[in-house]
Image 1 (cartoon, rainbow, N blue to C red):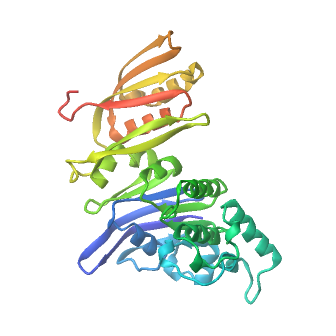
Image 2: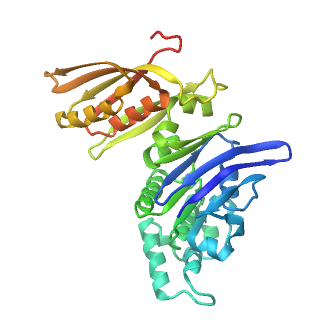
Image 3: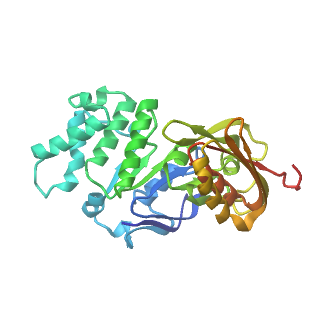
Length: 354
Protein backbone atom coordinates (compact mmCIF):
# COMPACT_ATOMS: atom_id res chain seq x y z
CA UNK A 1 0.00 0.00 0.00
CA UNK A 2 1.36 3.43 -0.99
CA UNK A 3 0.47 6.66 0.81
CA UNK A 4 1.40 9.84 -1.06
CA UNK A 5 1.24 13.57 -0.56
CA UNK A 6 1.39 15.39 -3.89
CA UNK A 7 2.43 19.06 -4.13
CA UNK A 8 0.26 19.93 -1.14
CA UNK A 9 -0.04 23.23 0.70
CA UNK A 10 -2.03 24.38 3.72
CA UNK A 11 -2.56 27.63 5.54
CA UNK A 12 -5.02 29.91 7.28
CA UNK A 13 -5.87 32.93 5.15
CA UNK A 14 -2.62 34.47 3.91
CA UNK A 15 -0.56 32.55 6.48
CA UNK A 16 0.92 29.53 4.67
CA UNK A 17 2.03 26.81 7.11
CA UNK A 18 2.94 24.01 4.69
CA UNK A 19 4.03 24.81 1.15
CA UNK A 20 4.20 22.40 -1.79
CA UNK A 21 4.90 19.27 0.26
CA UNK A 22 5.46 15.94 -1.52
CA UNK A 23 6.04 12.61 0.21
CA UNK A 24 5.81 8.94 -0.74
CA UNK A 25 5.43 6.20 1.89
CA UNK A 26 5.67 2.65 0.59
CA UNK A 27 5.03 -0.72 2.24
CA UNK A 28 7.30 -1.18 5.26
CA UNK A 29 8.64 2.38 5.23
CA UNK A 30 9.32 3.93 8.62
CA UNK A 31 9.15 7.69 8.14
CA UNK A 32 9.95 10.34 10.76
CA UNK A 33 8.58 13.88 10.50
CA UNK A 34 10.81 16.44 12.23
CA UNK A 35 10.86 20.17 12.72
CA UNK A 36 10.85 22.96 15.31
CA UNK A 37 7.75 23.97 17.23
CA UNK A 38 5.29 25.71 14.94
CA UNK A 39 6.70 24.22 11.73
CA UNK A 40 3.46 22.29 11.08
CA UNK A 41 4.22 18.67 12.02
CA UNK A 42 0.80 17.91 13.53
CA UNK A 43 -0.93 19.96 10.84
CA UNK A 44 0.84 17.87 8.20
CA UNK A 45 -0.47 14.64 9.74
CA UNK A 46 -4.01 16.02 10.03
CA UNK A 47 -3.98 17.12 6.39
CA UNK A 48 -2.41 13.83 5.30
CA UNK A 49 -5.30 11.87 6.81
CA UNK A 50 -8.06 14.21 5.65
CA UNK A 51 -8.94 15.77 9.03
CA UNK A 52 -7.97 19.11 7.49
CA UNK A 53 -8.36 19.91 3.80
CA UNK A 54 -5.28 20.86 1.79
CA UNK A 55 -5.60 24.31 0.21
CA UNK A 56 -3.66 22.88 -2.74
CA UNK A 57 -2.62 19.35 -3.66
CA UNK A 58 -3.88 16.04 -2.27
CA UNK A 59 -3.22 12.93 -0.20
CA UNK A 60 -3.48 9.63 -2.08
CA UNK A 61 -3.84 6.05 -0.84
CA UNK A 62 -3.00 3.55 -3.57
CA UNK A 63 -3.79 6.22 -6.16
CA UNK A 64 -7.15 7.25 -4.68
CA UNK A 65 -7.75 10.65 -3.07
CA UNK A 66 -8.14 10.09 0.68
CA UNK A 67 -11.09 12.48 0.83
CA UNK A 68 -13.03 10.29 -1.61
CA UNK A 69 -12.48 7.07 0.39
CA UNK A 70 -15.27 6.06 2.77
CA UNK A 71 -14.43 6.28 6.46
CA UNK A 72 -15.01 2.56 7.00
CA UNK A 73 -12.72 1.61 4.13
CA UNK A 74 -10.02 4.12 5.13
CA UNK A 75 -9.88 3.16 8.81
CA UNK A 76 -9.90 -0.54 7.98
CA UNK A 77 -6.36 -0.14 6.60
CA UNK A 78 -5.09 3.01 8.36
CA UNK A 79 -4.67 3.58 12.12
CA UNK A 80 -4.09 6.97 13.73
CA UNK A 81 -2.62 7.64 17.17
CA UNK A 82 -3.30 11.20 18.42
CA UNK A 83 -1.45 12.87 21.25
CA UNK A 84 -2.76 11.61 24.58
CA UNK A 85 -3.55 15.13 25.77
CA UNK A 86 -6.33 15.34 23.17
CA UNK A 87 -8.05 12.15 24.42
CA UNK A 88 -10.45 11.80 27.37
CA UNK A 89 -12.57 8.76 28.25
CA UNK A 90 -14.07 7.01 31.28
CA UNK A 91 -13.86 3.62 29.53
CA UNK A 92 -11.47 1.00 30.84
CA UNK A 93 -8.14 0.43 29.15
CA UNK A 94 -9.29 -2.93 27.75
CA UNK A 95 -12.55 -1.43 26.45
CA UNK A 96 -10.58 1.36 24.76
CA UNK A 97 -8.16 -1.05 23.12
CA UNK A 98 -11.05 -3.28 22.00
CA UNK A 99 -12.37 -0.32 19.99
CA UNK A 100 -9.38 -0.87 17.74
CA UNK A 101 -10.80 -4.24 16.73
CA UNK A 102 -13.99 -2.71 15.31
CA UNK A 103 -12.47 -2.30 11.85
CA UNK A 104 -11.83 -6.07 11.73
CA UNK A 105 -15.45 -7.00 12.57
CA UNK A 106 -18.46 -7.21 10.30
CA UNK A 107 -21.29 -4.74 10.83
CA UNK A 108 -23.30 -5.32 14.05
CA UNK A 109 -20.80 -7.97 15.25
CA UNK A 110 -19.61 -7.99 18.86
CA UNK A 111 -16.01 -8.60 19.94
CA UNK A 112 -15.33 -12.26 20.68
CA UNK A 113 -12.94 -13.90 23.12
CA UNK A 114 -10.39 -14.04 20.30
CA UNK A 115 -10.48 -10.24 20.08
CA UNK A 116 -10.05 -9.90 23.84
CA UNK A 117 -7.10 -12.30 23.74
CA UNK A 118 -5.45 -10.29 20.93
CA UNK A 119 -5.88 -7.07 22.91
CA UNK A 120 -4.49 -8.59 26.10
CA UNK A 121 -1.52 -9.98 24.19
CA UNK A 122 -0.70 -6.54 22.75
CA UNK A 123 -1.18 -4.89 26.15
CA UNK A 124 1.29 -7.41 27.56
CA UNK A 125 3.82 -6.76 24.78
CA UNK A 126 3.66 -3.05 25.56
CA UNK A 127 4.06 -3.74 29.28
CA UNK A 128 0.68 -2.34 30.34
CA UNK A 129 -1.53 -5.43 30.79
CA UNK A 130 -1.81 -4.56 34.50
CA UNK A 131 -3.83 -1.48 33.48
CA UNK A 132 -6.53 -3.46 31.62
CA UNK A 133 -9.32 -2.82 34.14
CA UNK A 134 -8.35 0.74 35.02
CA UNK A 135 -10.31 3.64 33.57
CA UNK A 136 -8.50 5.85 31.09
CA UNK A 137 -9.22 8.97 33.13
CA UNK A 138 -7.43 7.40 36.10
CA UNK A 139 -4.06 6.68 34.49
CA UNK A 140 -1.09 8.93 33.69
CA UNK A 141 -0.54 10.72 30.40
CA UNK A 142 2.32 8.38 29.51
CA UNK A 143 0.24 5.29 30.28
CA UNK A 144 -2.62 6.67 28.20
CA UNK A 145 -0.22 7.24 25.30
CA UNK A 146 0.71 3.55 25.41
CA UNK A 147 -2.99 2.60 25.48
CA UNK A 148 -3.71 4.64 22.34
CA UNK A 149 -0.76 3.05 20.55
CA UNK A 150 -2.04 -0.39 21.56
CA UNK A 151 -5.54 0.46 20.27
CA UNK A 152 -4.06 1.37 16.89
CA UNK A 153 -1.95 -1.77 16.62
CA UNK A 154 -4.73 -4.29 17.39
CA UNK A 155 -6.63 -3.19 14.28
CA UNK A 156 -3.91 -4.86 12.16
CA UNK A 157 -3.38 -1.76 9.99
CA UNK A 158 -1.42 -1.56 6.77
CA UNK A 159 -0.52 2.05 7.60
CA UNK A 160 -0.12 3.53 11.08
CA UNK A 161 0.33 7.27 11.66
CA UNK A 162 1.38 8.54 15.08
CA UNK A 163 1.45 12.10 16.42
CA UNK A 164 4.43 12.37 18.80
CA UNK A 165 4.17 8.79 20.12
CA UNK A 166 7.08 9.23 22.57
CA UNK A 167 5.58 12.29 24.29
CA UNK A 168 5.08 11.87 28.06
CA UNK A 169 6.98 8.56 28.04
CA UNK A 170 9.92 7.57 30.23
CA UNK A 171 13.06 6.02 28.71
CA UNK A 172 11.81 2.45 29.03
CA UNK A 173 8.47 3.10 27.37
CA UNK A 174 10.11 5.17 24.65
CA UNK A 175 12.25 2.15 23.80
CA UNK A 176 9.21 -0.15 23.86
CA UNK A 177 7.36 2.12 21.42
CA UNK A 178 10.37 2.53 19.13
CA UNK A 179 11.01 -1.23 19.09
CA UNK A 180 7.32 -1.84 18.36
CA UNK A 181 7.41 0.52 15.38
CA UNK A 182 10.56 -1.18 14.13
CA UNK A 183 8.90 -4.61 14.32
CA UNK A 184 5.75 -3.34 12.59
CA UNK A 185 7.87 -1.89 9.79
CA UNK A 186 9.76 -5.16 9.37
CA UNK A 187 6.42 -6.98 9.07
CA UNK A 188 5.40 -4.71 6.16
CA UNK A 189 3.34 -2.07 7.98
CA UNK A 190 3.98 1.49 6.80
CA UNK A 191 4.76 3.64 9.87
CA UNK A 192 4.77 7.45 9.90
CA UNK A 193 5.42 9.41 13.10
CA UNK A 194 6.29 12.95 14.00
CA UNK A 195 8.80 13.52 16.75
CA UNK A 196 10.79 16.09 18.70
CA UNK A 197 13.72 13.65 18.90
CA UNK A 198 16.04 13.77 15.83
CA UNK A 199 18.04 10.95 17.42
CA UNK A 200 15.00 8.65 17.27
CA UNK A 201 14.60 9.43 13.59
CA UNK A 202 18.28 8.73 12.91
CA UNK A 203 18.24 5.41 14.76
CA UNK A 204 14.86 4.13 13.61
CA UNK A 205 13.55 5.51 10.33
CA UNK A 206 14.64 4.78 6.78
CA UNK A 207 13.18 8.08 5.51
CA UNK A 208 12.71 11.47 7.14
CA UNK A 209 10.90 14.71 6.37
CA UNK A 210 12.41 17.80 7.98
CA UNK A 211 10.21 20.89 8.13
CA UNK A 212 11.53 24.41 8.62
CA UNK A 213 9.35 27.37 9.50
CA UNK A 214 10.50 29.63 6.67
CA UNK A 215 12.49 27.60 4.19
CA UNK A 216 10.28 24.69 3.15
CA UNK A 217 11.32 21.13 3.83
CA UNK A 218 13.65 18.32 2.86
CA UNK A 219 12.56 14.69 2.38
CA UNK A 220 14.63 11.62 1.66
CA UNK A 221 16.89 8.96 3.11
CA UNK A 222 17.28 9.64 6.84
CA UNK A 223 21.09 9.64 6.76
CA UNK A 224 20.98 12.46 4.19
CA UNK A 225 18.28 14.46 5.98
CA UNK A 226 19.26 14.20 9.66
CA UNK A 227 22.74 15.71 9.52
CA UNK A 228 24.61 18.15 11.74
CA UNK A 229 24.23 20.90 9.16
CA UNK A 230 20.51 20.33 8.56
CA UNK A 231 19.82 20.21 12.30
CA UNK A 232 21.57 23.56 12.66
CA UNK A 233 19.64 25.10 9.77
CA UNK A 234 16.24 23.77 10.88
CA UNK A 235 16.47 24.10 14.67
CA UNK A 236 19.07 26.85 15.07
CA UNK A 237 21.22 24.56 17.22
CA UNK A 238 24.82 23.43 16.84
CA UNK A 239 24.80 19.65 17.30
CA UNK A 240 27.22 16.75 16.99
CA UNK A 241 26.27 13.35 15.58
CA UNK A 242 28.47 10.66 17.06
CA UNK A 243 28.73 6.88 17.15
CA UNK A 244 28.09 4.87 20.30
CA UNK A 245 29.35 1.31 20.24
CA UNK A 246 27.48 -1.39 22.18
CA UNK A 247 27.95 -5.14 22.29
CA UNK A 248 25.04 -5.56 19.88
CA UNK A 249 25.57 -2.71 17.41
CA UNK A 250 26.85 0.78 16.71
CA UNK A 251 24.25 3.49 17.36
CA UNK A 252 24.14 7.12 16.22
CA UNK A 253 23.56 9.74 18.91
CA UNK A 254 22.92 13.48 18.66
CA UNK A 255 24.12 16.00 21.24
CA UNK A 256 23.03 19.65 21.16
CA UNK A 257 26.01 21.91 21.96
CA UNK A 258 24.80 25.50 21.74
CA UNK A 259 22.56 27.89 19.87
CA UNK A 260 23.65 28.56 16.31
CA UNK A 261 24.74 31.88 14.83
CA UNK A 262 23.53 30.83 11.35
CA UNK A 263 19.87 29.96 11.90
CA UNK A 264 18.70 31.67 8.74
CA UNK A 265 20.98 29.85 6.27
CA UNK A 266 19.09 27.66 3.77
CA UNK A 267 19.41 23.89 3.93
CA UNK A 268 21.91 22.85 1.24
CA UNK A 269 22.28 19.06 1.12
CA UNK A 270 23.63 19.20 -2.44
CA UNK A 271 26.34 21.78 -1.72
CA UNK A 272 29.82 20.41 -2.45
CA UNK A 273 32.13 20.26 0.55
CA UNK A 274 35.78 19.35 1.02
CA UNK A 275 36.29 16.92 3.89
CA UNK A 276 38.55 14.34 5.48
CA UNK A 277 36.95 11.16 6.82
CA UNK A 278 39.00 9.44 9.52
CA UNK A 279 38.31 5.74 10.08
CA UNK A 280 39.64 3.60 12.94
CA UNK A 281 38.85 -0.10 12.57
CA UNK A 282 39.55 -2.47 15.45
CA UNK A 283 37.97 -5.38 13.56
CA UNK A 284 40.20 -6.38 10.64
CA UNK A 285 37.38 -8.44 9.10
CA UNK A 286 35.51 -5.22 8.27
CA UNK A 287 38.26 -4.12 5.88
CA UNK A 288 36.54 -5.50 2.80
CA UNK A 289 33.26 -3.74 3.59
CA UNK A 290 35.09 -0.47 4.26
CA UNK A 291 36.84 -0.78 0.89
CA UNK A 292 33.51 -1.52 -0.82
CA UNK A 293 31.89 1.60 0.66
CA UNK A 294 34.88 3.76 -0.31
CA UNK A 295 34.91 2.27 -3.80
CA UNK A 296 31.25 3.24 -4.26
CA UNK A 297 32.24 6.82 -3.41
CA UNK A 298 35.29 6.61 -5.67
CA UNK A 299 34.30 9.44 -8.00
CA UNK A 300 34.49 11.87 -5.06
CA UNK A 301 37.83 10.71 -3.63
CA UNK A 302 40.90 12.97 -3.84
CA UNK A 303 43.29 10.89 -1.78
CA UNK A 304 43.52 8.01 0.66
CA UNK A 305 46.11 6.99 3.25
CA UNK A 306 45.96 3.90 5.43
CA UNK A 307 48.25 2.34 7.99
CA UNK A 308 48.04 -0.40 10.62
CA UNK A 309 48.80 0.59 14.21
CA UNK A 310 49.92 -2.78 15.47
CA UNK A 311 50.43 -1.72 19.10
CA UNK A 312 46.67 -1.23 19.53
CA UNK A 313 45.73 -3.72 16.80
CA UNK A 314 43.81 -1.20 14.71
CA UNK A 315 43.83 0.07 11.14
CA UNK A 316 43.73 3.83 10.58
CA UNK A 317 42.44 5.20 7.27
CA UNK A 318 42.18 8.86 6.24
CA UNK A 319 40.21 9.69 3.10
CA UNK A 320 40.06 13.13 1.49
CA UNK A 321 37.07 13.81 -0.75
CA UNK A 322 35.00 16.55 -2.31
CA UNK A 323 31.32 15.68 -2.59
CA UNK A 324 27.79 16.91 -1.93
CA UNK A 325 27.36 17.26 1.83
CA UNK A 326 24.54 14.68 1.86
CA UNK A 327 26.79 12.11 0.15
CA UNK A 328 29.55 12.61 2.72
CA UNK A 329 27.11 12.24 5.62
CA UNK A 330 25.56 9.15 4.01
CA UNK A 331 29.00 7.53 3.65
CA UNK A 332 29.84 8.34 7.29
CA UNK A 333 26.54 6.85 8.46
CA UNK A 334 27.08 3.64 6.49
CA UNK A 335 30.60 3.24 7.86
CA UNK A 336 29.33 3.84 11.39
CA UNK A 337 26.95 0.89 11.12
CA UNK A 338 29.95 -1.47 11.00
CA UNK A 339 30.82 -3.03 14.36
CA UNK A 340 34.29 -2.13 15.60
CA UNK A 341 34.58 0.89 13.28
CA UNK A 342 34.78 4.52 14.49
CA UNK A 343 34.33 7.35 11.99
CA UNK A 344 34.62 11.14 12.05
CA UNK A 345 34.26 13.66 9.21
CA UNK A 346 36.14 16.97 9.39
CA UNK A 347 34.97 19.65 6.95
CA UNK A 348 36.94 22.47 5.38
CA UNK A 349 35.66 25.96 5.95
CA UNK A 350 33.63 27.20 3.01
CA UNK A 351 36.48 29.52 2.02
CA UNK A 352 38.52 26.38 1.35
CA UNK A 353 40.90 26.22 4.34
CA UNK A 354 40.78 24.00 7.40
